[in-house]
Image (cartoon, rainbow, N blue to C red; front, side):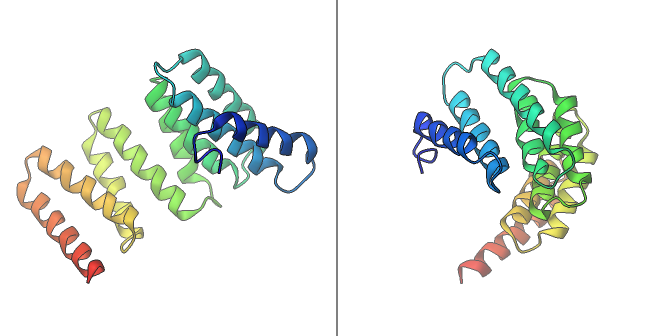
Length: 186
């Protein structure tokens, strides 16, 4: 609750308490991940963003990944670290490798894999590789047909078609989205 209310000091103190007192408990890894998420929110919420703090946070994420290995709990950590590398530290290649690791991880949750595909598609767009991006967006559209993530993928594909100059394809994507949203409202 403290983290949601942007009271990061209280949230960090709570997570530190759990980490100190329940080192062998079942929630230890979850507390570590949430503590890092709270620190990330705190760092991103300050202006201007201090790159030294972002690098320190990335180092903490890397240490956690080393400890978790290929465990299923490592997938969300990789996803968050990829965002840090892509948009805060400017290392898109490393971010793409982390996202691909999430996609390739056998026990990763399906919605997290699809979210990683969307982010990887965005990074391909930044590298001027629209065909790779549309391929990933289409995969998410197919696996998340009636879910908000699938609609987001369809919207990104429509936007990509529009900016590529394929207005008819973009319009067909938008018509499908329009029908899906009106069906859900009714």
